[in-house]
Length: 109
Length: 421
Image (cartoon, rainbow over all chains, first blue to last red; front, top):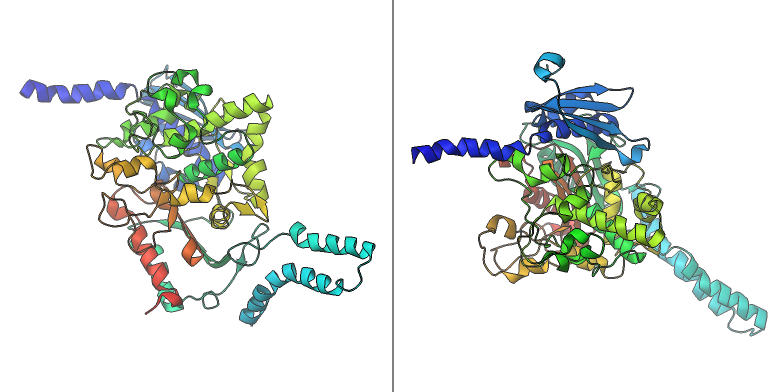
């Protein structure tokens, strides 16, 4: 019985592996939309993306209207389209070649 | 002063439509010369050519909404204040960003908070689903798809057991039968609704991902609310329009050509995936007063400025007819959490189901229908009261952090003088 209970966290981990893109992709997209469609303040957008920021960090490029987010070993990019009526879309989701712990600025104040 | 002006306008407007007919008819009854008959026929046709008044109110709010004071619109100001106190309560239980109340086509209240204003776009969350439903209605009116359109005709991935029977009607009723958990009850991060937007296998073409999803039930066997159905509707529309027009342009412009431009919903943004499919279940943005125009279109049976945008009978189908899958069961089964809702075609209804003791929103009449979304987004339309209310918010996920919609309706309806004891 104890062995079985010990297996539960392991099974949950394995199950959640396929979802590890979600924190970076979700944060990139949500942040991009919040900043560049709504034009809300970064402070407000941080608040509404609180859940996504637990596992990911972001960097916003205001000139390119683009957000790059890294987390849970993935790097995702979301960008506002040329026609703003179509909002932001995720441009790429890739395995992060570098650990963000070492190379990514800690902008999560 | 305002009262008398608006009342006069209100009484005059229908007369401007009928009067020329009567007057000219009377005038031309005696001389029966041919040219005059022609003039008469021309004048008779004028009322048909001019824009008929809406069923609710006396003007079309295409350019902008007109306003009325609470008193003129029949509200008790002191009681209405109780509603505002609740919506804007600052104890931090819930967070309202925008609140608009419209009675018979007139704004009687409009307020914003937390950095929002009449022009700052707010996220629609699942408001987008009711927009998707309306866009499918508009596409049916234009002949691009119909309720019997089969998904398998556009997605060969659906050519498998149970899946090949799925039609647009099943999709709009959220009863296709896909194995999909909108919200994972254990961990929200593991919800399919997140995975279908934010995974490598989905983000480039979300509708294709839905088409490949396993089936759990046959169509109409089980109601299962989820973002995937709205995505799929938009994917099927894309492929159907591409096939019929031979270009992507018609689909790319469709929401504006068919809906947003005629209603002048200028602020609306609809996000897409990399294959240019509108996300359907989410990804809409706009201001509350623009979203309210969707409510006004529904109130007026899908007609705007005399032009039919949605097919005849569509509004009844979408907003007053419970999804057949919900009617099948007399009691809750294993999927009880999903099966207690009152739902139409991507609109939430207020009909009492056999399995429930009461209506979902007991304080509101049973003709209420709503567009609803995450973080407390709510548009309620009550045809019997001529009411549209839009509340946009940023509520938390815990029940105590959410605006209680039934309480909102109770306070709103009790503030209407005709409702008072």
